[in-house]
Length: 339
Image (cartoon, rainbow, N blue to C red; front, side):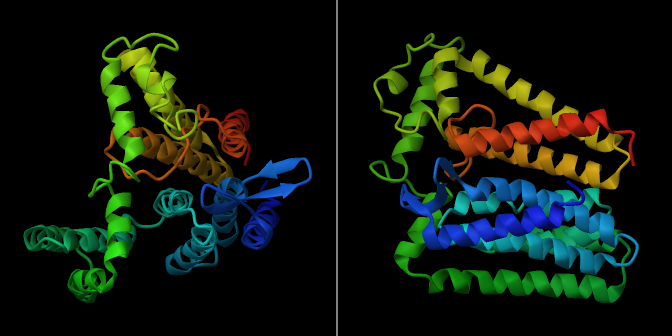
């Protein structure tokens, strides 16, 4: 895939553009392409293509590009599919691409302080709605910058940037219409809508809580069998496991995912080829983000984004991509001594 990384990415972008023109609609979004007997979701395969092209960029550019240029390129190749998927609209899938930036930049050798300067303004945006939280975060930022022993201009620019972000964000928020604010708050789980967006989450939490330690038994769950949980075979499949197999069954699933993730990190660390190592850590990031968000989502500690649980949730495209991610890890492990 090293030789075809750019081609793979180009095909992925073309397919995402095609979705916006002739894509099939479903569940209020235009996400699928239907080519005769083939019915697939291009956004799923775009995740793999983005990982491959970032790994290829590091392989091609490590000798002649400075950090700021590789960072700009990585942001560009990630933001392009994100924006196209957001237009479908599918915010949950679009956000899957965001973790590729810090994980692959860090694994590719970009300075942690550079990454800190890039991503800390996002924390400032969140903290800016409470003065005391914002003030505490600014103290932490200043302390970290001082301890990093960087140049004075670097320290001043970062402090000024975060202050500006903190001041501007509340004004931007209040410029939104009320219905736009409600959509954002519902997505973040800060407001409840028992008969609308929050219904699925409420039923999911009831199912998980009623499972107890050992669960109600196979096909014995009341929330699932009586269809109180509508999306139980896809995004909320973990609720079914927790209700029927209980806390023990849910923990077994989490431990199995943890084994895959830790093994993937070990494979990435042992690969001699930089391209293979970056691809491996990209696959780990993809699986970890899906698992973390999906399980957090059904438990009510993460926003409801509609992400499937890898290797478990129903869905052809997502299942194939999850299996492909694991297959790439196995292949890299087998060839870890090759440059």
